[in-house]
Each structure stands twice: as C-alpha cells, then as structure tokens.
Length: 82
Image (cartoon, rainbow, N blue to C red; front, side):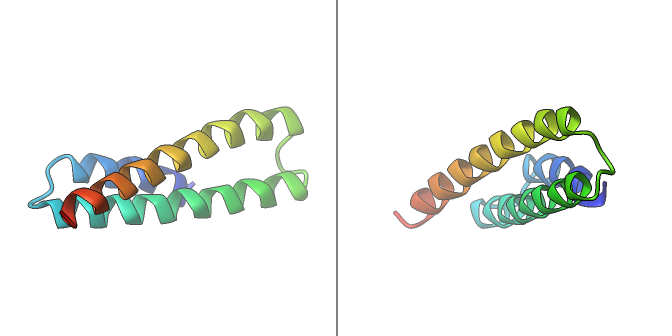
C-alpha cells in the first residue's frame, strides 16, 4: 500500500519541482516505488492474499505505470544532458 501510494505522491510533487534535476529525481524515486509495488503485488499473489484476476488487473496497470515512468526518466535524462 505504501509503495503504491508513494508513486502518485511523488509524481504530484514533481509537478512543482524546483528544477529539471529535481523533477528527474522525483520521477526516479517514483519509478523505484513502482518497481517495489510490482514485487509486493507478486508476493500477494504468490501467498494467495489476492485472487489471480485481481492480481492480473492491478499488475497490468502497474507495468504500464512503470513503462511510462521509464520513458519519462529516459526523456528527462536526455533533455538534461543536452
């Protein structure tokens, strides 16, 4: 729960970042939290804490979020390195 909700909080914080570097830092941390969330979801599935259909739905969304954050981070790194 904590890592999953941290993603949204960090992205919201990044909207008002003080600089490009600050924005990138917050997005990098959001990406780490999203990756951690994937781990916890997998653990919840493996221990039968959540049902497979719940896992598949949430995991799909989580993977899309990770891909989006990876894209943002890569794009921002390219922008800052120019």
